[in-house]
Image 1 (spheres, one colour):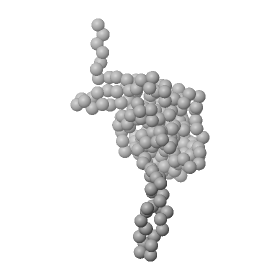
Image 2 (cartoon, rainbow, N blue to C red):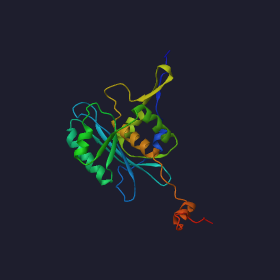
Image 3 (spheres, rainbow, N blue to C red):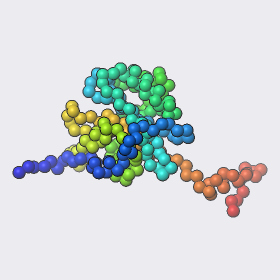
Length: 221
């Protein structure tokens, strides 16, 4: 005689997620020539929320590869944690990090003091999760083997609000959080949105053609 709620459903299935995990890989060292992207989820250090940092990059097939996920659980000093985050970012050649709009309002100043530019995300978390779901379902991401991150991902819920608008978040209970997966989703969506120049033989030919005295390039055969 149970009545099931039709405004609540799971975000993604375990079967989908398991195929995307590089089991046994917990972190990838920085490599030269790779453009890394980072997203941070901040917290005050005295509540129940963790402070997190995720770093990813795009491979040659435009698949998102997760390189790092770090979680600082409370209690902690935001100043000390951001100092540690800045040091990690620099090892990956990152000078700019995007993060959620934390109500404390402290992160930009603390990051600036550590030589990192902090940019608040222009999108709300739920919208980021919607785009992140497309990466998951199309298998365009490889996730690190991190128990906390995967648990948070599998616990996300999709809710239908008034007017049919969908909202995605963790269960409304103090026992559930999404600090780690929020950072990973943010970094992945940012990286996947970046468009690079595709180097083709035709483009290389045009770039290598010398100019005449008028500054015009000769015709490419």
